[in-house]
Amino acid sequence: MPGDVYLDNAATSWPKPPGVLEAIKDFLAQAGGNTGRSGHHRSIASSRAVSLARERLADLLGVESPDELIFTKNATEGLNVAIYGLADGVAQIVTTSLEHNSVMRPLRDLEQRGRCAIEIVHADGNTGEIDVEEWTARLRAASPALAVATHASNVTGALLPIEALAAAAREAGVPLVVDASQSAGHVPLSLSALGAAAVAMPGHKGLLGPSGTGLLYFAPGVEPEPLMRGGTGSQSELEYQPGFLPDRYESGTLNAIGIAGLGAAAEYLADVGIDSVQERLTDLGRRFRDGLAGVDGLTVLGPADPADSVGIASLNVEGVPCATTARLLDDEWGVMTRAGLHCSPAAHRSLGTAPEGTVRFSWGNDTSDADIDVAIEAVRTIAARERSAEPLGTVA
Ligand SMILES: Cc1ncc(COP(=O)(O)O)c(C=O)c1O
Image (cartoon, rainbow, N blue to C red):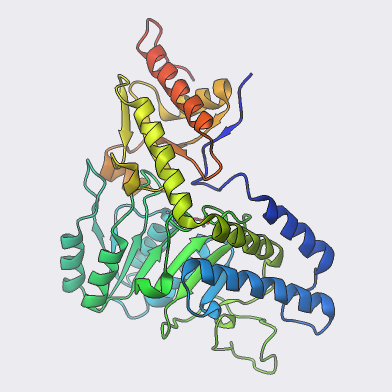
C-alpha cells in the first residue's frame, strides 16, 4: 500500500497550518461581507481581517508600511503588474536563464511586440550559478533598462546572491524586479531593506496560505501604471483610479477568504520563525543528499551544500524518463513529486536537462525525516532496478 509523502511544496505547500483552516472558517461565519465597500458590520469585519493579514505579512516580510503590500491572486499577477508597468520606456531588460515562465513569457511578449530587447545572463551549466560580474557588466551597458531576477531557482532550489544583484542594479540605476516565489517563507526577507523596485511572491507556497493568494511590493516612489483599473470602495466619486496604495493596484473584490487564511499563516510563521524554517529545510536537504550519495546512475542537480538553496532538489535516474520515475514514486511509494520542465525551460537548457527535464522533490517545514527516508529508499530502488537485468527505461 503506497504511503502519502507530499514532496511537491514548490508547486504549492501542503499541509497548511491548522490556523489557516480556522481563519477561513471564521471569516465565512463571522465576517463574510465585501471589504472596504459598505458600512455594515460584516463589511467592517471583513476589512479588519484583510488589514490584520496585511499588517502580519508586512511584519513578517520586513515591509515598513503595510499599505506597500498589495494583494494579488498569485505570483504571476504581481510579476506581470511589475514587469509591464516598469517596462514602459525601457530599451533593454536584463534577466537570468533561471526565470520561470511567469517572467519569461511577459518578457518575450514585450520583445515580440518590439518594445524592448531581452538580455539573458546564463546560469553556469554545472553549478547553476549566476555570475554577478556578468550581471553587473550587462546592467552597466544597458540603458534605459529594467532588471528581473529570481531569488531562488524553482528547478534546483539554488539561492541567487540577491543582495549583490540588487546592489549592482542600484549602482547602475536600473530598477530591479525580484521573483521571491521560492524564497518567501523559506528564507528571512526584508523587502524594505533589499532595495529592489518590486518584489512579487505567491501566498500559497512557502508562506503557507491558500491558493488564489499572492503579494506584490513596490518600493516607496515606484508607482508604475496598474494593469487593471476598477472599483476599490475608495473615492467612489472619481472616474479615475485612486493613486494611493494599495488601492492603485487592488481593483475589484479581493479574495478576502484566502487573505484571511494567509494572515493566519503569517502569524504561524512568525511564531515558528523563518530562521528556524530555513534551518529545518537545510537539514532535510542534507538528509536527502546524503541518503542518495554514491547511488550509481543518479544525477542530483543544484548546490552541493543545501544551505545554499531552499527546500528543493532535482534529479534524474540514468536511463529512466523523469515522468516514469515520478509515476513509480507515486504509484509504489505514494511519494508526490513533479516531473518535467517546471515552467522553466531556459533553466533546464542551462543545466543540460532540456527538453525532458527532471524529477523535482520539494519539502516543507512539516516534512518528516521519515518522509525523506521513504523518498531516498524509493529512488535507490528505482535506480537499482534500472541497472538490473530488466531495466525500467521502457515502462510507459
Ligand atoms: C520561481 C517561480 N516564479 C513564479 C511562479 C508562479 O507562481 P504562481 O503560480 O503563484 O503564479 C512559480 C510557481 O511555481 C515559481 O516557482
